[in-house]
Length: 158
Image 1 (cartoon, rainbow, N blue to C red):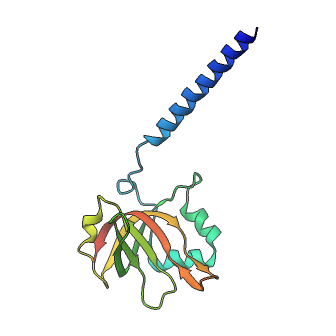
Image 2 (image 1 turned 30 degrees about the vertical axis):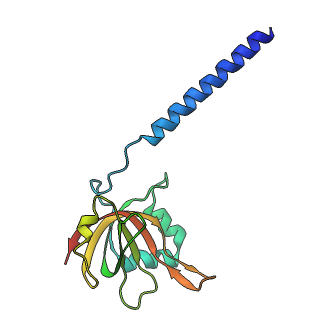
Image 3 (image 1 turned 90 degrees about the vertical axis):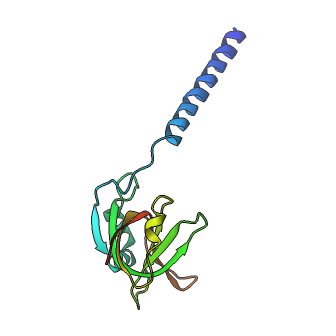
């Protein structure tokens, strides 16, 4: 009797490991979302999205995030205030007009980095990507935080 219980227990544990491993591998090797090939959900100016998040972050999240939590695809028009690189050598472009409290920080991908090389401060650009976090005010540091967006590529440069 004890051998049957141990045998069944081992079979159940083995099945759990196999099923759990299969789910992990399925999730890990799922293709990444091709943001640039996806239809744009919103086209707006940088200051509009910043103002929406500063006025009411919950309403802005309801508007710009899907029910699963993924961001809708957004095209943002703005003035290039600053260009930098992150630790992965990806271009990060800050869209922010003079006098604005916060801007939109847009991180390009390794594949789209080459399109950001020609950008310089003062350029008016439209770029397309997804939102990672909204703007806000950090009371401890007494400063505004930018809208953080990623998977960006240049759509138009004026």
